[in-house]
Amino acid sequence: MRIAHVITRMILGGAQENTLYNCEDLQRFYGDNVLLITGPSLGPEGSLLERAQASGVPVRIIGSLRRSIHPWRDWRSYRELHEVLQEFRPEVVHTHSAKGGILGRAAAFRLQVPAIIHTVHGAPFHPYQSPLSAFAFRACERWAASRCDAYISVADAMTDLMVAAQVAPREKFTTIYSGMEVEPFLQAHEQRARVRRELGYADDHIVIGKIARLFHLKGHEYVIQAAAEVVRQNPRVRFLFVGDGILADELRQQIAAAGLDAHFHFTGLVPPEQIPPLIAAMDVLVHTSLREGLARTLPQALISAKPVISYDIDGAREVVLPGVTGYLLPPQEVAGLAQAIVELAADAGLRERLGSEGRRRCADIFRHQHMTAEIRRLYVRVLAGELSNVEL
Image (tube, rainbow, N blue to C red; front, side, top):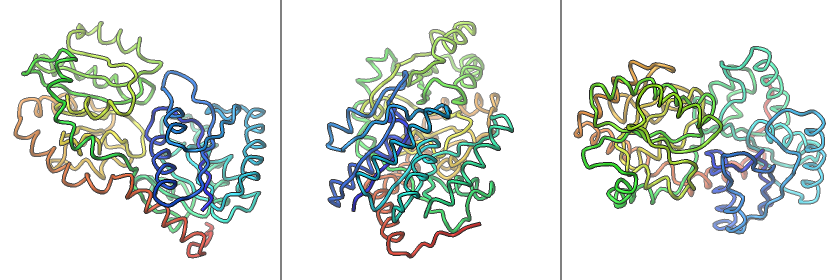
């Protein structure tokens, strides 16, 4: 097949890594002709473009394709997207992210591309927007849905959300969990002692980790607020923030103001291959974001046999099973977060039981090879006319 993937930017993020694995697998295992079309990877979140190019995935960068709304620049992006797709002549256009998804579907539809697919990594509308912004994003998604043959949701929760917003009927959606390289997480424990020494942790420290960009709605502030009570009850607890972003200085100031400097460590931006050993150094992973389709850090931690504490947002409940693989809490809950951390920090047997069950449940279904096989099967079905372009 000739397959074009369109995404707004290739920063270090879950949607981007998912997309890159899909491109690499389609070439390696199926011999497909793949083109990755993206905007520039600007800002402090890092870039996956070098990895894409090193792995042999053809990349076209559209300089005007940016995340922020800018009518003139967005029009230029659409025109260039149209030209690139017209030149490449794909059988399948697979779009990702809000901006890339809307412009990519519009251009592909105008060119009458046989199969147009969009992955919902996370809905572009959410409760933390202004009502006007949420209305505008819903309207744009409904318009783009009529130019799309099928949707892929990274979690059932994404399908429920999009259907409830009347973006598209349920028949258009297929849930396919985001794939990853599972083996490094299965084997990560071998590096635990070394990484903990390098980070300065003692054998009796209980390390609570969070992996996320230091950005709005990622919820680092709730971990900091909970930490004061946690440390009061168990001074051996330490907190590890993995990632970088525009809120780095602000978060450090909050930690200093709470007198918790000795209990927090920031790694800064790290490449994806360093995530497994960092998770190995942890004893528990917390996920306090307020919106995210299905955060990759949740299955990554579970595959590494680490229990997780997560806010009950979007697809988290599909892998975080209370009392089975971890704790599920109401969003923005601080007291409950502190209590959950205290309970897990005090009970090594509980940590081992929850983590082991998480590994058993997640290790196979999150392999990137499984994801790509399911995605390609969907392409074939759309091209064969098995999925009609259902309208509301």
